[in-house]
Image 1 (cartoon, rainbow, N blue to C red):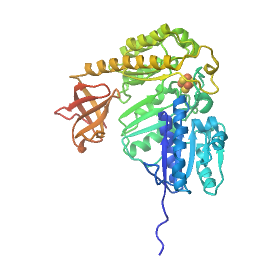
Image 2 (cartoon, rainbow, N blue to C red; image 1 turned 135 degrees about the horizontal axis):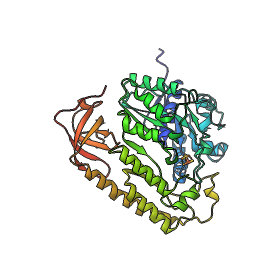
Image 3 (cartoon, protein in one colour; image 1 turned 90 degrees about the horizontal axis):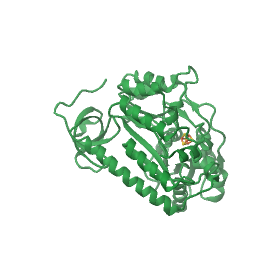
Image 4 (cartoon, rainbow, N blue to C red; image 1 turned 90 degrees about the vertical axis):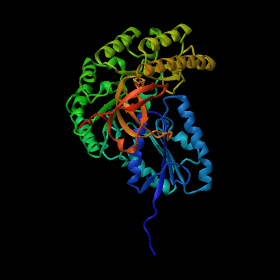
Length: 448
Ligand code: SF4
């Protein structure tokens, strides 16, 4: 008796940023065409793919220990295939295959589209590493894994031309390439038709987006996408402060579908460190930008990145980063200890700081930010927020959760009938990482 062809399963482990999350959706889509169904756990999977990040040394170490731990699974299931993709793969290439004998294939950021070929060869026992240059043309990506949901990620550009002194991205993701606006519009329309209500546009530096076919800038692209029927919300990340244009601030202020939420990484608060990093702006210019944004876009939530312990950073420099937090009053902050990355200028700089000094500075910075975040959240008590309800809260407390326009997580009592709706919620309690509220008696109107 013959039954249906056996289904193969793949587990995809994603490390790093939202760009990687987007790439993982493409990986899932490409593997679905080979008959692989995605599963949540590596145990029992026929294929395990790690989509890696090398921006921080710690992220890279996590990848090595994760692949190391998979050895036991491979011994228990000899047919299991294991592949590594993403930035670490691009950076290490063949070396990964040499150092990790139980690894079957490696694909860099420029070879993602050739994944099916690598998997087919691995099945025949051929181990290969493909890195290559970043693709000349970004493929239209309208059909990632079929994961119907309210929210989707769309990459508008890849790569970066900025070469900040500490950053490996231009070396592993290549130079900037923008996708044509017409492709992006078609993709957004297709997503909205599938029920997606919120799109986050991704790029290493979306502010330097330029439509290769018509010259449209990023503010123009946002306005074009805001016209997509059925789409309620647009967000984007990341914005390089030196390229944030007045037109983009106007669009944030004037286009209701563009959320009041901006990630604007400063990286440091002192001018000598900003100069050494090659960021292209001063502390004063950055603060002026933050002031203009707050004045033009009431309620805007600003996010930042800060690196502590950059080579040569003095205690005084560090104090400037601490005071930057106080002046900008970030709603959310990603903070990291500096670590040497391959190829980078900072890796060759003198004045490296000892690990305990960096760790202690990071602790002080994060403690300062926790205090600021809590103050900002408490100041919202009594206000009303528009929330797109995403589902039950993760802790199963009879609450539902969603994000407000500024991107904060809001939990409130409610049932599954609210999922997928835009509702008004009165904020009753500001907590460190979220807000607790109550549905307003008149549930508010849904956008169309
Ligand atoms: S702008 Fe600087 S930090 Fe950001 S991706 Fe480009 S080089 Fe890296």
